[in-house]
Length: 205
Image (tube, rainbow, N blue to C red):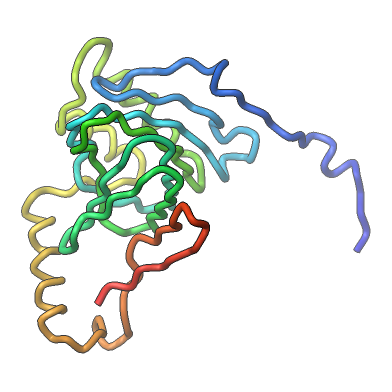
């Protein structure tokens, strides 16, 4: 393979120190953009988020164009997907959410939760900026504002009725006890890497 240094002359390692990046506010939540995606031609963006205690988090939704990773650094974050028990991620746990999987997260605990959020591709970072603009300063993030912003960024907000359909679907599948979904085996769920370093991939039955 021929190597031409001129083809990568525009590339560089990018370094971000959180100490130099101020927190921004989305109502009762905080976030800061560690990497906005410009360094990777929007293939990857990274955001740090803080959720106060006893917070419901965003509404149920799924993404049509990007996968997400959540690396918890403080407190605990509860992840929800319709039809299954919630998953509590502690510091140094990693949760990955694939395109198309309905989900939300919350912090029902007594301590502020902080996590690093990876977004691939990284265009969804603009959602946070748009939402910040929508709700303005000093206001709470409401489900209505959340829904309005999600719809602009290839993300489908889910009503209670739709969430109920998913829950009913999985109740019926579990009742069959075959371990198969539409005859094609188990469906991938949220995958979790424990703080011990062991990678675990959860299969839905």
